[in-house]
Image 1 (tube, helix red, strand yellow):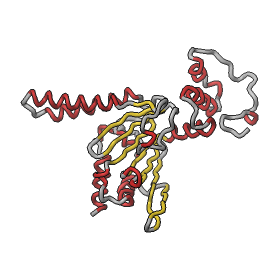
Image 2: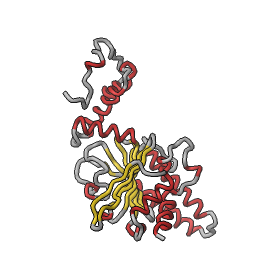
Image 3: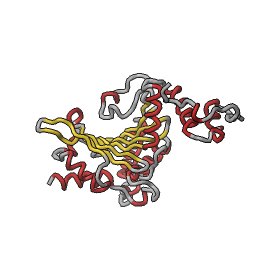
Image 4: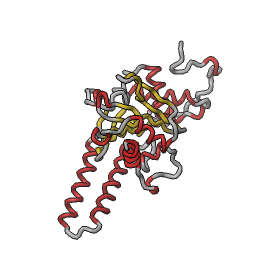
Length: 282
Protein backbone atom coordinates (compact mmCIF):
# COMPACT_ATOMS: atom_id res chain seq x y z
CA UNK A 1 0.00 0.00 0.00
CA UNK A 2 2.80 2.43 0.93
CA UNK A 3 4.47 1.88 -2.42
CA UNK A 4 1.26 2.73 -4.23
CA UNK A 5 0.93 5.93 -2.23
CA UNK A 6 4.58 6.82 -2.86
CA UNK A 7 4.15 6.45 -6.61
CA UNK A 8 1.11 8.70 -6.44
CA UNK A 9 3.12 11.30 -4.53
CA UNK A 10 5.86 11.18 -7.10
CA UNK A 11 3.51 11.42 -10.07
CA UNK A 12 1.73 14.41 -8.57
CA UNK A 13 5.00 16.16 -7.83
CA UNK A 14 6.29 15.84 -11.37
CA UNK A 15 3.15 16.05 -13.47
CA UNK A 16 3.67 18.53 -16.30
CA UNK A 17 2.10 19.02 -19.69
CA UNK A 18 4.15 18.09 -22.73
CA UNK A 19 3.89 21.63 -24.02
CA UNK A 20 5.49 23.04 -20.88
CA UNK A 21 8.76 21.14 -21.20
CA UNK A 22 11.22 21.98 -23.93
CA UNK A 23 12.04 19.00 -26.12
CA UNK A 24 15.79 19.45 -25.78
CA UNK A 25 15.85 19.52 -21.99
CA UNK A 26 17.49 16.72 -20.05
CA UNK A 27 15.48 14.18 -18.10
CA UNK A 28 16.14 15.67 -14.68
CA UNK A 29 15.83 19.33 -15.63
CA UNK A 30 12.33 18.73 -17.00
CA UNK A 31 11.12 19.28 -13.43
CA UNK A 32 11.53 23.01 -14.09
CA UNK A 33 8.47 22.78 -16.34
CA UNK A 34 9.53 25.10 -19.12
CA UNK A 35 12.17 27.06 -17.23
CA UNK A 36 15.88 26.43 -17.68
CA UNK A 37 18.99 26.71 -15.56
CA UNK A 38 20.46 30.22 -15.60
CA UNK A 39 17.01 31.80 -15.94
CA UNK A 40 16.83 35.24 -14.33
CA UNK A 41 14.58 36.21 -11.44
CA UNK A 42 12.45 38.16 -13.93
CA UNK A 43 12.06 35.12 -16.17
CA UNK A 44 11.04 32.93 -13.24
CA UNK A 45 8.48 35.48 -12.07
CA UNK A 46 7.09 35.81 -15.60
CA UNK A 47 6.81 32.01 -15.70
CA UNK A 48 4.65 32.01 -12.56
CA UNK A 49 2.65 35.03 -13.68
CA UNK A 50 1.73 33.08 -16.82
CA UNK A 51 0.79 30.05 -14.71
CA UNK A 52 -1.53 32.11 -12.50
CA UNK A 53 -3.08 33.79 -15.55
CA UNK A 54 -3.71 30.36 -17.08
CA UNK A 55 -5.24 29.08 -13.86
CA UNK A 56 -7.59 32.06 -13.84
CA UNK A 57 -8.57 31.56 -17.48
CA UNK A 58 -9.27 27.87 -16.98
CA UNK A 59 -11.10 28.37 -13.70
CA UNK A 60 -13.28 31.25 -14.90
CA UNK A 61 -14.09 29.87 -18.34
CA UNK A 62 -17.50 28.55 -17.32
CA UNK A 63 -18.26 31.16 -14.66
CA UNK A 64 -21.25 33.37 -15.41
CA UNK A 65 -21.17 35.43 -12.24
CA UNK A 66 -18.84 38.47 -12.68
CA UNK A 67 -18.35 38.64 -8.91
CA UNK A 68 -17.04 35.08 -8.79
CA UNK A 69 -14.70 35.84 -11.68
CA UNK A 70 -13.34 38.88 -9.94
CA UNK A 71 -12.86 36.92 -6.72
CA UNK A 72 -10.87 34.28 -8.60
CA UNK A 73 -8.84 36.97 -10.37
CA UNK A 74 -7.89 38.56 -7.05
CA UNK A 75 -6.99 35.16 -5.58
CA UNK A 76 -4.62 34.33 -8.44
CA UNK A 77 -3.10 37.81 -8.37
CA UNK A 78 -2.51 37.48 -4.62
CA UNK A 79 -0.87 34.07 -5.13
CA UNK A 80 1.51 35.57 -7.68
CA UNK A 81 2.29 38.60 -5.51
CA UNK A 82 3.12 36.27 -2.63
CA UNK A 83 5.74 34.60 -4.82
CA UNK A 84 7.06 37.98 -5.95
CA UNK A 85 7.34 39.28 -2.37
CA UNK A 86 9.11 36.12 -1.19
CA UNK A 87 12.32 37.17 -2.93
CA UNK A 88 15.19 37.20 -0.44
CA UNK A 89 18.89 37.90 -0.78
CA UNK A 90 20.89 35.42 1.27
CA UNK A 91 23.47 37.91 2.45
CA UNK A 92 24.01 40.46 5.19
CA UNK A 93 21.85 39.95 8.27
CA UNK A 94 20.45 36.55 9.18
CA UNK A 95 17.37 35.62 7.17
CA UNK A 96 16.06 32.62 9.12
CA UNK A 97 16.82 30.26 6.25
CA UNK A 98 20.11 29.41 7.98
CA UNK A 99 18.16 27.17 10.39
CA UNK A 100 15.46 26.00 7.98
CA UNK A 101 14.94 22.94 5.82
CA UNK A 102 17.31 24.44 3.23
CA UNK A 103 20.18 24.71 5.71
CA UNK A 104 23.31 23.66 3.84
CA UNK A 105 21.84 24.43 0.43
CA UNK A 106 23.42 27.89 0.25
CA UNK A 107 26.34 29.84 1.65
CA UNK A 108 25.72 33.28 3.22
CA UNK A 109 27.28 36.23 1.37
CA UNK A 110 27.79 34.02 -1.65
CA UNK A 111 25.81 36.10 -4.15
CA UNK A 112 22.77 33.84 -3.69
CA UNK A 113 19.06 34.61 -3.42
CA UNK A 114 15.75 32.76 -3.63
CA UNK A 115 12.04 32.81 -4.40
CA UNK A 116 9.61 30.67 -2.38
CA UNK A 117 6.61 29.02 -4.00
CA UNK A 118 4.08 27.40 -1.66
CA UNK A 119 1.92 24.67 -3.15
CA UNK A 120 -0.72 22.44 -1.57
CA UNK A 121 1.65 19.52 -1.06
CA UNK A 122 5.10 21.07 -0.93
CA UNK A 123 7.17 24.20 -0.62
CA UNK A 124 9.60 25.00 -3.42
CA UNK A 125 12.71 27.16 -3.17
CA UNK A 126 14.01 28.53 -6.47
CA UNK A 127 17.61 29.50 -5.76
CA UNK A 128 19.79 31.89 -7.73
CA UNK A 129 23.56 32.41 -7.84
CA UNK A 130 24.53 35.88 -9.07
CA UNK A 131 21.00 36.32 -10.39
CA UNK A 132 20.83 33.03 -12.31
CA UNK A 133 18.64 30.06 -11.39
CA UNK A 134 20.79 27.10 -10.39
CA UNK A 135 18.94 25.09 -7.77
CA UNK A 136 15.40 23.98 -6.91
CA UNK A 137 14.65 22.54 -3.47
CA UNK A 138 11.31 20.78 -2.97
CA UNK A 139 10.29 20.13 0.66
CA UNK A 140 7.12 18.09 1.05
CA UNK A 141 4.50 18.89 3.68
CA UNK A 142 4.70 16.44 6.57
CA UNK A 143 1.03 15.46 6.13
CA UNK A 144 1.68 14.62 2.50
CA UNK A 145 4.43 12.08 3.21
CA UNK A 146 2.84 10.64 6.35
CA UNK A 147 3.06 6.87 6.28
CA UNK A 148 5.41 6.79 3.28
CA UNK A 149 8.77 5.22 4.01
CA UNK A 150 11.83 6.95 2.55
CA UNK A 151 12.91 3.74 0.84
CA UNK A 152 9.54 3.54 -0.92
CA UNK A 153 9.86 7.18 -1.93
CA UNK A 154 13.31 6.56 -3.42
CA UNK A 155 11.97 3.51 -5.24
CA UNK A 156 9.21 5.62 -6.77
CA UNK A 157 11.75 8.15 -8.06
CA UNK A 158 13.87 5.29 -9.38
CA UNK A 159 10.99 4.16 -11.55
CA UNK A 160 11.30 7.40 -13.48
CA UNK A 161 15.05 8.05 -13.45
CA UNK A 162 16.51 4.57 -13.00
CA UNK A 163 18.72 3.35 -10.18
CA UNK A 164 20.49 6.14 -8.25
CA UNK A 165 24.16 6.83 -8.92
CA UNK A 166 24.87 7.07 -5.19
CA UNK A 167 23.18 6.06 -1.95
CA UNK A 168 24.07 6.88 1.64
CA UNK A 169 22.92 5.15 4.81
CA UNK A 170 22.69 6.44 8.38
CA UNK A 171 22.64 4.72 11.75
CA UNK A 172 19.15 4.02 13.05
CA UNK A 173 17.71 2.33 16.13
CA UNK A 174 17.08 -0.83 14.13
CA UNK A 175 20.36 -0.78 12.21
CA UNK A 176 21.05 1.34 9.12
CA UNK A 177 18.46 3.19 7.07
CA UNK A 178 18.63 4.86 3.68
CA UNK A 179 19.27 8.59 4.18
CA UNK A 180 20.20 9.94 0.74
CA UNK A 181 20.09 9.03 -2.94
CA UNK A 182 21.64 10.89 -5.87
CA UNK A 183 20.98 10.84 -9.61
CA UNK A 184 22.99 12.67 -12.28
CA UNK A 185 22.77 13.35 -15.97
CA UNK A 186 24.97 15.60 -18.11
CA UNK A 187 23.26 18.78 -16.93
CA UNK A 188 21.54 18.20 -13.60
CA UNK A 189 21.99 16.48 -10.25
CA UNK A 190 19.04 15.28 -8.18
CA UNK A 191 19.52 14.55 -4.49
CA UNK A 192 16.82 13.02 -2.27
CA UNK A 193 17.31 13.39 1.48
CA UNK A 194 15.44 12.05 4.46
CA UNK A 195 15.07 15.05 6.81
CA UNK A 196 12.37 13.65 9.06
CA UNK A 197 14.63 13.73 12.12
CA UNK A 198 14.76 17.54 12.22
CA UNK A 199 12.12 18.83 9.80
CA UNK A 200 9.69 15.91 9.37
CA UNK A 201 9.99 15.97 5.60
CA UNK A 202 11.77 14.59 2.56
CA UNK A 203 13.55 16.97 0.22
CA UNK A 204 14.34 16.76 -3.48
CA UNK A 205 17.19 19.02 -4.56
CA UNK A 206 17.77 19.66 -8.26
CA UNK A 207 20.92 21.58 -9.17
CA UNK A 208 22.74 22.73 -12.28
CA UNK A 209 25.99 20.78 -12.20
CA UNK A 210 28.04 23.43 -14.00
CA UNK A 211 27.15 26.14 -11.47
CA UNK A 212 27.54 23.75 -8.54
CA UNK A 213 31.06 22.83 -9.65
CA UNK A 214 32.00 26.47 -10.14
CA UNK A 215 30.77 27.46 -6.67
CA UNK A 216 32.77 24.59 -5.18
CA UNK A 217 35.90 25.87 -6.92
CA UNK A 218 35.37 29.37 -5.56
CA UNK A 219 34.69 28.12 -2.03
CA UNK A 220 37.76 25.90 -2.15
CA UNK A 221 40.00 28.69 -3.46
CA UNK A 222 38.77 31.60 -1.34
CA UNK A 223 36.76 30.20 1.55
CA UNK A 224 33.02 30.17 2.18
CA UNK A 225 32.88 33.65 3.78
CA UNK A 226 34.16 35.79 0.91
CA UNK A 227 31.77 38.63 0.14
CA UNK A 228 29.60 38.78 -2.94
CA UNK A 229 31.52 41.46 -4.85
CA UNK A 230 34.79 39.59 -4.50
CA UNK A 231 33.08 36.41 -5.62
CA UNK A 232 31.71 38.05 -8.75
CA UNK A 233 35.22 39.09 -9.77
CA UNK A 234 36.68 35.73 -8.82
CA UNK A 235 34.03 33.88 -10.84
CA UNK A 236 35.08 35.87 -13.89
CA UNK A 237 38.74 35.09 -13.20
CA UNK A 238 37.91 31.40 -13.06
CA UNK A 239 36.08 31.72 -16.38
CA UNK A 240 39.24 33.18 -17.91
CA UNK A 241 41.40 30.41 -16.49
CA UNK A 242 39.02 27.64 -17.54
CA UNK A 243 39.45 28.60 -21.21
CA UNK A 244 42.72 27.58 -22.87
CA UNK A 245 42.29 30.34 -25.49
CA UNK A 246 43.06 33.42 -23.38
CA UNK A 247 42.70 35.67 -26.41
CA UNK A 248 39.00 34.78 -26.67
CA UNK A 249 38.14 36.32 -23.31
CA UNK A 250 38.23 40.06 -24.00
CA UNK A 251 34.53 40.20 -23.06
CA UNK A 252 35.32 38.76 -19.61
CA UNK A 253 37.98 41.44 -19.13
CA UNK A 254 35.33 44.01 -20.12
CA UNK A 255 33.00 42.65 -17.43
CA UNK A 256 35.73 43.14 -14.84
CA UNK A 257 36.56 46.70 -15.89
CA UNK A 258 33.03 47.80 -16.80
CA UNK A 259 33.85 49.10 -20.29
CA UNK A 260 34.97 47.92 -23.71
CA UNK A 261 38.71 47.30 -23.58
CA UNK A 262 41.28 46.20 -26.11
CA UNK A 263 43.71 44.06 -24.18
CA UNK A 264 46.67 42.08 -25.47
CA UNK A 265 46.60 39.06 -23.17
CA UNK A 266 49.07 36.97 -25.15
CA UNK A 267 52.29 39.03 -25.18
CA UNK A 268 54.61 37.90 -22.43
CA UNK A 269 52.35 35.03 -21.43
CA UNK A 270 54.37 32.19 -19.79
CA UNK A 271 54.15 28.60 -20.88
CA UNK A 272 51.04 26.73 -19.68
CA UNK A 273 53.10 24.56 -17.35
CA UNK A 274 54.33 27.67 -15.51
CA UNK A 275 50.92 29.29 -15.00
CA UNK A 276 49.51 29.15 -11.46
CA UNK A 277 45.74 28.57 -11.48
CA UNK A 278 43.30 29.88 -8.89
CA UNK A 279 42.89 27.18 -6.27
CA UNK A 280 46.18 25.45 -7.13
CA UNK A 281 48.46 24.56 -4.25
CA UNK A 282 51.35 27.06 -4.03
